Length: 69
Image (cartoon, rainbow, N blue to C red; front, side, top):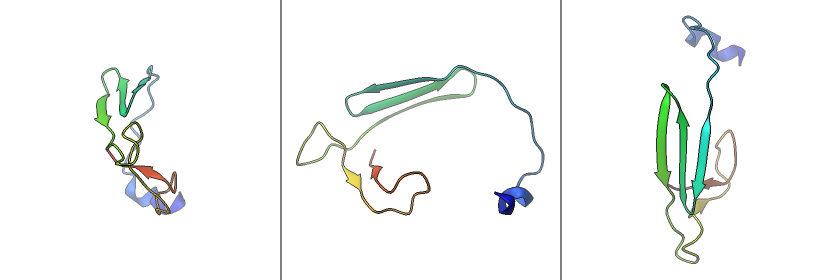
């Protein structure tokens, strides 16, 4: 994280906000009042339309398996 320090010009503070996360089938939605409203739908797999199409062995920092949306 120290390498990112030069990219941060100023800290604007921290706010406490409720986070609402919803999952329905392939859809996902997140809401943070006054900050974020985001929804997406997963790309259905040809083998099983109830599951998202995924990429494995990625270099993503959070998970090596990433679902497509």
